[in-house]
Amino acid sequence: MRIRFMAAPLLLLSLLCAACQQGEEKASGPSIAVVDIVRVMRDSEAGKAGLKYLEDTQAGIQKQLDDIQTKLEKDPENDQLQKQLQTVYMSAQQQMAEEQQNVLSQLQNVTKRVMDEFRKSKGYDVLFSAETLSSYDEKLDVTNDLLVEMNKQKVNFVPMNTPADEADKADAPADDDTDDDKDAAPADKATDKAEKPAR
Image (tube, rainbow, N blue to C red; front, top):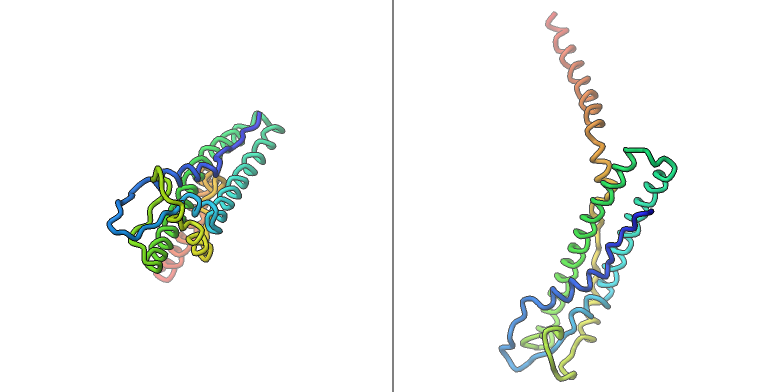
């Protein structure tokens, strides 16, 4: 039975909702507007790029798992492959959690900056998150206008360490011994050279 890695980038959407419900302030002036922040982060070019990045990352992880499992099907008694599969899977879970948080953080930062600039340029005192309001006049909704500004932003999502990298690190001690021997050899030679002139 094959392991399927289901991190589901859609989890990002639930995180967006939770994030949007934090830190709201009461209006202190008459000039207000309402923004559907979840929609801005989800439907903007930056938001779509973030979700695509997470989907690609998850697909890459699944390919690593599939490759190991294919080898295991041919050699089911291979303890090293079984250990590698477990290491990659556990590392993949941690990686996806970190990647999702990273994408969410970048999107929140960009959205906050664009909202601040938008509010000041349009002369609003306050921008309310639609997710926190039970009822409001649709005329106050400026989500479409804010989306236009968000779509001008470019966000580059950079990959973090892959599970395969972590699996390689787990096998590293044997390699380190070899490296130490290699490192020690030049040092010994240098010592020999230093001793020869003294003779």
